[in-house]
Amino acid sequence: MTSGQNRWTLALTALVLIAMFVAIWMVFQYVPNERVMGPVQKIFYFHVPAAMITFLSVFLLMASSITYLWTRNQRWDRISLASTEIGLMFCTLVLVTGPIWAKAAWGVWWTWEARLTTTLILWLLLAGCLMVRGYAQNQDLGARLASVLGVIAALDVVIVYKAVHWWRGQHPIVFKSGEKNPLAPEMYTTFMYCIGVFMALFLLMMILRVTVLALENRTQALAERRTGELS
Amino acid sequence: MTGAGFFRAAGVLAAKDLSIEWRTREGLSAMVLFSLIVLVVFSFAFDLATIKQLGPARLVPGILWTTLAFAGVVGFTRSFQVEARRDSMTALLLAPVDRGALFAGKSLSNLVELLILEIVVVPLSAVFFGYDLMAMLGPMAVVVFLHTLGLAEMGTLLGAVAAKVGRGEALLSTLLFPVTMPLFISAVKCTNAVLEGEELSTVSNWLLVALGFDLLFLFVGLLTFEYVVEE
Amino acid sequence: MKNFDFLFWAYNVIWLGIGGYIVFLVLRLKAVSERLQRLEKSSGD
Image 1 (spheres, rainbow over the protein chains, first blue to last red):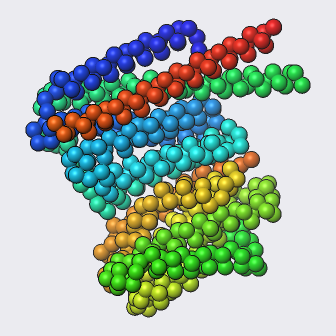
Image 2 (image 1 turned 60 degrees about the horizontal axis):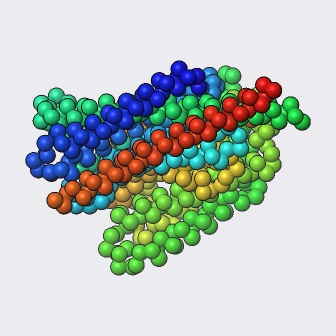
Image 3 (image 1 turned 135 degrees about the vertical axis):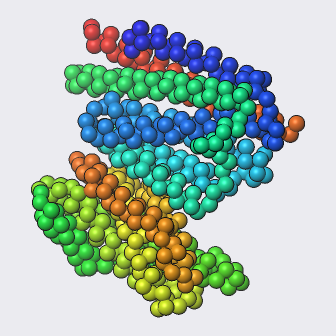
């Protein structure tokens, strides 16, 4: 990493950190409590953006997996691995915050509802991608198998959603298309702001993860060449 | 490769697998015995009063498909172990055969083995849990075939992935069950409807889910199998 | 207010998750950068 790149990454990290503190302030101080559910509804400002980022990562996973299989350029595999890991992390956050809200609102920790179930399945699929990478004897094989699994996971999650939706559904839907926006203006601002912060966070994590991977690859290649020269 | 050549290659491959299986009958006998044991375990898992109270229509779909999925995992793992033991996969890869045809042939032989297993297991479930199979033979066959097809495709593709990293049933189950979840839900719903004596048209949306799954992953398998098996 | 308990834990979990991951990334970045520098220096000799 050059020092110029380094500076930009540092600046972005600082920016995201500040933005996150602003987000906490907005959620706890600025935004009014929701009438029916009270303060617990505030989890929505993190839960929903986290869910959005999860699905964004899955989309990125699919695109980079296909591109990797096509071009066999390591760069795409790094993006694919990074989006699997980051997607898995945000998916975990969604799965943890969801039940906390559900316990307060519905009185149960878990229900086999459409989106919850889909998210759980998605978590398992992403974990499977990482597991296969870990088991593979070499990086190239791991990249190929994980890319195939990534494509399968991304396509499957659509069918899972459709299937579970018909199976059972009771998730609260706040935004319905074609309806007037039901949120108070402060709520709407905060919500949009939180989405923005999470997007920036996602970008930062992707950059960091991909950089780490690229450096690791270079280090490994260099180390292998050195042992080759010595022997 | 021409279209006719593709089908001939797939047919030859499936015939080769099945003739090896026919000589030893190792895989099928293992699968049949395994399913029998799972069925017996399930009948002990519920006491007699529960079985009577729920009735076969509520009880059998879940038990039947869980049994078939577990037995399928045993079969898929074995079908690649046979290749590994004889080192015939390398020979197959050297042959000027389209990798898609390899996938089609392997899926076909897995499908046939599963269907043979089902010819034993479905009547057995009728005997154990007391429903009249003869009265619903046609719809049952349609439902079983549609869902077994998807299971065989996915089992072949993911079985190849698990075999490639040298892992067996444990990895295959963790990969296969989340991916086939929509198929599983659909299978249970459709089998339930059949056992209730309803027309297949009442579950037409579920049959469409199964058909969509079958077609989508047939396509995905044909396209991606070469990345899984290549050296 | 009873509801606040849930909220408190939820936020803690989120921040711990995100913060932990970023710290992990930065530490790894540092370690690998140092290793790379060492290697490049020694191969330059």
